Length: 363
Image 1 (cartoon, rainbow, N blue to C red):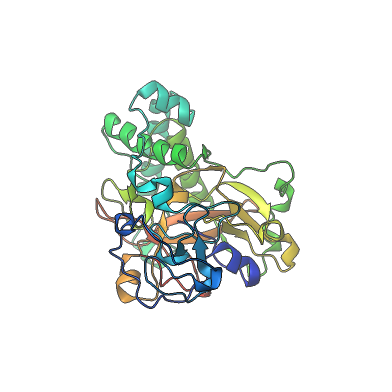
Image 2 (cartoon, rainbow, N blue to C red; image 1 turned 60 degrees about the vertical axis):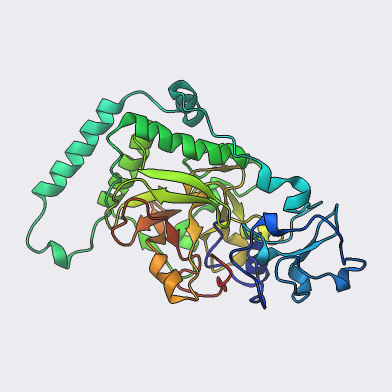
């Protein structure tokens, strides 16, 4: 579950699970381990978590509205980011663990329509070749002393495999009730596009160079024509939806832009969404912006975070999240921070440079 980074105070606590480490929560727990009989939940203060057996952290203890059993947010698999609004039913009562995920049909016309793909692949290939030739001509012995440039992703050469990759994303988007979008969207009642001004950033942000902007635009145009990043979305019983590399990816490759509806942070302080991302951290907090991918989004929503409280967790990080000034607007990119092997899951650090959020419950 992706979450916002670089935000502070109550807004941060509402959007992310602020849970102390459980006393004895087993990571090997599965929903089948939950018994269907009995309940010791006569009163809320007497409830213990079915998974770890502890009644600690009552603010993070959910009660099923059907069986009254208790579950810590951080003991559920996948972990819940916050207490859901409205009624909540445990996995046993909803039979969630017995429901088979319905895969998106592997039909080219349906996938093309779902992602609104244009049919002009030859033009995209020519643009890609021209940019690569231009970079080769401009190379020199002093390149190592200059800022390293971002790379466009290299799509899988097999068109059938690319359809399978897109179908995996369509499956995840459909299952979460999310419309596909590959751009920041500005909706009535939320922040207008005029509010997205990188000049308002309190600490400054990196400026995307002209050449890197061309690379980002190339990636966008390739996707519009069906040449997608080599990524597969899969469902994991502990992590939920997760993203895997489907072929080798080079360091500094643009993986995706983090997109969704743009809104003011002040409007989202009590939001229980699990995947908001900081877009603009303004000196005037009332002008700070977040990206909300719960209604419209792309594959970025399903890229998970690392447990940066453990050495093993830190070793898994293979992406970095960077906010850029692109022609005066704020944009967020996920970029490979090392070579990524085929089959690796993609992870990045939600905390960025501030290290405010305890991620010890990430698996």
